[in-house]
Length: 281
Ligand code: GUN
Image (tube, rainbow, N blue to C red):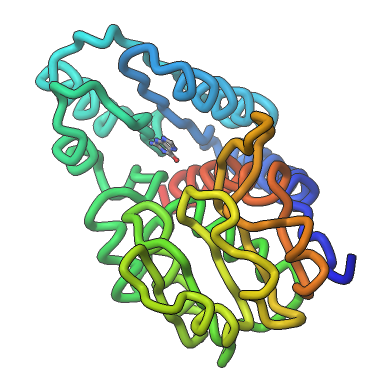
């Protein structure tokens, strides 16, 4: 293996310790940071995510409320709950777990969250703040990727970054964050021709497609930083990312594993955003 591993679990632990210290400092000022997590329905993956988010709050001293509702909750009732949380001074961050049941317009619900409490960074006001470089919340997964890249000590300024994937939650905000860090950014997607021609030019590759073996060793410039956002299962049912890790680690300079790379960072950045929200007051 030539690449150095970027350990997302270790970086997460370090950042969560910092969060815990900031929580203590805030409490001394009489502010107890609080996160509301809203789950509608019984999607099994969402239940695991939500449990992990609440646990992370407990571990770092962040106050959390978990509101669980039946899948048949009306959109109007959910909007009313969000309004109540918007007005609740004990709550600094609001997270409505996605996906929502079909009969609820997820976009309308996200837009009803106060931008000041949008710690997921999914509101159009948050997206607009990212786009214009003004203060707002950065969505947690791409924000975590930035922290992983920065943990290598490599300065993104002037580097060529290639993002594979253009989703609203990862690919697009990732590209804007890299731009904010003064990288030269290329966004590749399902209609891109000759993906390899692009990735071979990249000092940094972020793979966020949701398809295993999207990035293979022949597509990577020697020494490049490779960030794998994918969460897939291989033929044996084992968790794997979008990157052919075993082969790419022989070419890349730095690489994130799956699991233990980007995954733990998403919840960590949610905690960081919640702290930020509480500190802004
Ligand atoms: N569903 C899967 N990931 C996420 C996330 O980061 N935030 C929310 N709100 N829902 C999700």
